Length: 413
Image (tube, rainbow, N blue to C red; front, top):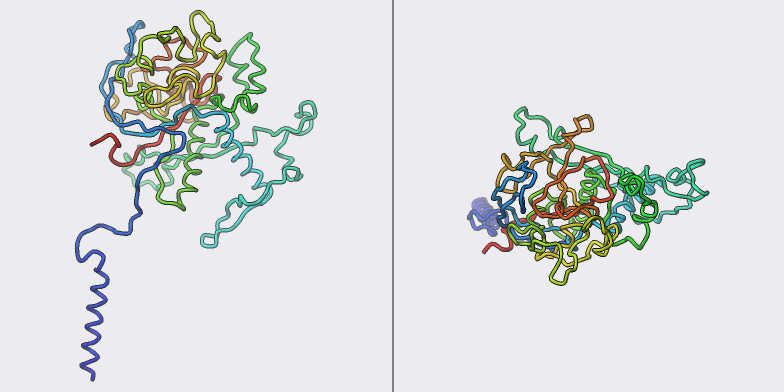
């Protein structure tokens, strides 16, 4: 009897071992329960296929500075917003920050049953008449004409980034948190740029109306510095991930594009094209201007826009991108160095430097591209480089986001 029990136990063990190996049958198959990935199609973005371009001045280097020395580079496929980020899109970010602060004031939290951490419960309705929220509004002498207005200085948001380059070169075994960087920014656009940027010029109506009035909802947001653009991209990533975690694996992070990614997209597949539409001139065959800039000696309204125009105005380039020349210049993630082309890599070239507040001003220069509504046509050329300080806000600088394409590029066969 004891022998029969031993035999049965042995047979059971064999069956269990066989069952454990059923899925892979003893073969090296990799982990089989991995989530599937079929790619994404982000709303409001277009796909830019990988390819090669020749960077450098698209016209004569009349200054002889050789800031744009010719060079051949390759760029990986990516997604890019088809328009500049608009006032209404950016307002979604501002309102999210405003509401999260209000929920915090009203103690609208729930506790995670596993970690014990507290999170904002967005199911709660915000009672904006609650006296607890009075601190969010201007008080006393700060009120203008007795109006109850939100104090935009209270709209603070902290974003994070991981310093991968410093981590990659670390040989000391430093803890991971030493490479996590954080920055707190005021997310409300600096509306006073419309007055500050122009001496002896009446632009007060733009200061009062440009960001909040529905007439400008589809116009590009301005008055956002480089940090604010990065904060928006970080928030947008978290917004996307909060949805994706319930519906599959997440994608790469949204970000502002690096300089030559932007330039490659601006050319619309036309190598050495001086403008996004491919031609050498600012007008089409009928004499119509093709972008929003400063024509001639200052005939601002000739192109249809005295200041900015709607983000999808004029015809897009062959990638489907609007206003890659003119309207507003756009932030890139790239640090500005005059001789950058002479030492940067030829594969996805990008130079970054996380300038601190105490750094010299020259360290805080970031590349902007595309020219704007107040620039002459030279700055609208796809090969023209320009810069602004990362902590400054301008009435002529906006941004759009990029998203890396994961896997083999769609156009690779």
